[in-house]
Figure (cartoon, helix red, strand yellow):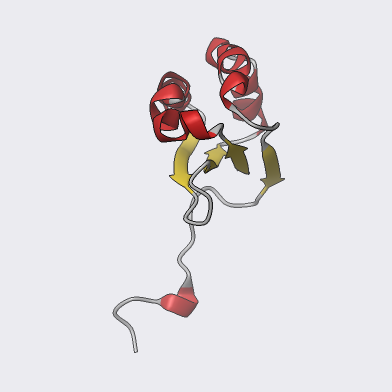
Length: 109
């Protein structure tokens, strides 16, 4: 799978509304057959920063995503709300979903 984490520094005047600003893009991406997850979180250290954790089934699904109409629309509509170009970490990993964090197993002694 392709695993991506991106940080979006949002203009302070738009930060509280970012989930609504990105809502159409988020919904359309989540509806893609190759999207495994597409989840936003707000930083606990900086209320103007949102972290996007996303994953796609494979290279083909990732390519389909960046070539989609909703991705192209987001390239136009989202940047005016940002302070800077988002930062990203992008890796292909040899698994298809989340693994358990064994060091913090729940219910085991």
